[in-house]
Length: 289
Image 1 (cartoon, one colour):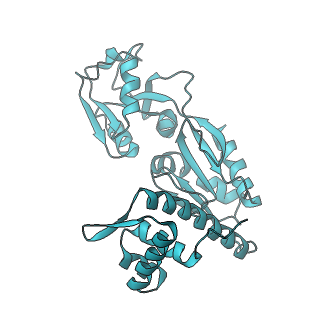
Image 2: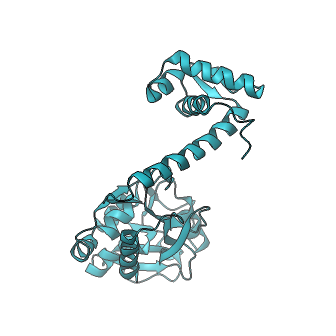
Image 3: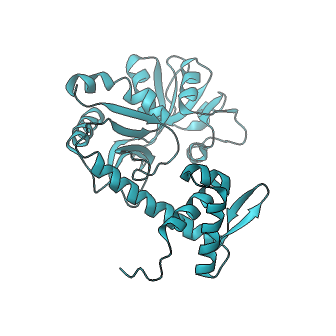
């Protein structure tokens, strides 16, 4: 590798922190250096590259377009370095498997089953991190992510875990019969997750006049499901999220998407699949079967 055109790694690290934090002072605190040191690192890089990398914006700083591109590459590169170092340090240390998953999947699918995993694998500790946000498995040291969607997710090994097509559900007994077309349910309140416009689009494609019906949106799928349980209307959500309630007879399916390409997937780093992670993935497959 030709390092002649690569400036000081210390300067690059200082600039990356400044661009990410949006302030020299915050970057200085993170790296335990002075504000002046961060400013000097940025000036040296601007001289080296012959362009402005950071500009003042209000009380803080923001990267220019050139700075943004450089910072993005540095964040990814430093993340790879940090993860590689952590992997070596922790290679012989027993640590919990870090799992990123959506809050709805955690509450409505994984937690009702987790006791079986504990019983079968008492020596494997799990650290569950429920969040709707996408995560960087390498930079944030996650072992696996369970994600809803179609994929692909570049740079990760992806395995389809279970189907997750749209289903329309209601409290058992609320609706007399299953629907053959969603227009038959137009007189009921519709309960959905906020920001999930795909649910509404799918309903419209299956006969519902979404411009005239009453639609109530909730911050999470779990809240929408609780409203369904309470009999406040009909809900649109992945069937797997409501499956436990369906099995108990509390909730019933009125209409369901056939042959959907939506699914929950297991995402892992291709370069790091430990024996404990293989055990977890095998258990997840059996639970989803």
